[in-house]
Length: 128
Image 1 (tube, rainbow, N blue to C red):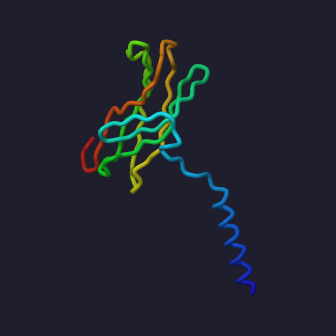
Image 2 (cartoon, rainbow, N blue to C red):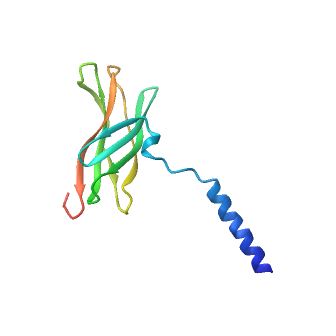
Image 3 (cartoon, rainbow, N blue to C red):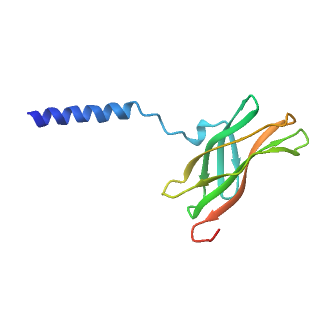
């Protein structure tokens, strides 16, 4: 009986832990979307005092992609780049095609809109 009670308690703890888990974000959870030949980017922009931050998911369309470089850019009304972030790397090491990313920049004040751009794509089996 003791082992049955322990098994029931363990089952309840496991189920309770799963019930409180946060759901995994999905691409449809984000309001902004960029499509590139190799990748789809789904993101949300947050503007705080002195910072513009993009966070979301990048989905590879080709499973041979191992890494991508992303950058947030600010554009003025004439679509000229007026601010840029440092590049961030997103890496795929497992079988998942979706990875989270976050990137931020310091706005100049001339930005009318923002975009997340792909700077580079590295494939498995290729040297950097």
